[in-house]
Image 1 (cartoon, rainbow, N blue to C red):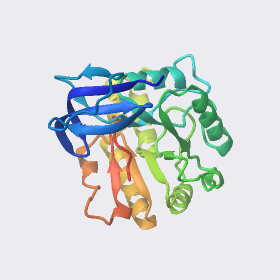
Image 2 (image 1 turned 45 degrees about the vertical axis):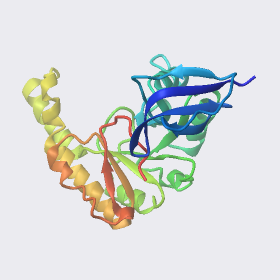
Image 3 (image 1 turned 180 degrees about the vertical axis):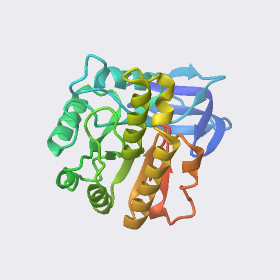
Length: 273
């Protein structure tokens, strides 16, 4: 027999409002949300959970996770990480493509969806990874089924650097209806800075040099290029890891909705629309 639960005396946060009330759950679904001045339905078989002093909020969507499956499951996998997500109130996630193999083809992406259908405890979607050569694969994406395309404009983990200007132009122009999410650093600046620091320190470059090699200028130049491409091609853009105040001036909420750009720090967030 399916149980009915009443969550009572809760401070409910939902749809921009905060209020005291109760929630009825049955058949695994929320059936009714009431304010404190509304009587609860009568069900003698219901289990009552007193939420006094607690917040009840909708499940959070984490738009940037790395679950390491396939290929890196000695670190974690879709089951273990989705279990951790649900324990922390994350009910949906969007997972990045730098697994082994990297999700840069429809076939590999479909395999990740197959694994998740059997193992994930949360709702899920997966990013397709971009390369300098896989524009034809990206063109096959159904925007209703894939959360977006991940573009590494600066090198990071994995082998998905997209540093060819023609490839970037083609990617942005052919991605209408898709979210393009970028790791935003200028590879030429990083490479030159890295060369200079290795000339100075050899192979033992101090860890504190990281922010000087992947510098403010590297971040700004890459983000400025991506914003210009997004505006030119009317592409939805999500800039990940924004780390400099200077970049923030590139984002303008006064643009028409279809041309707006977004940024995040890879923390739990609502889906970008």
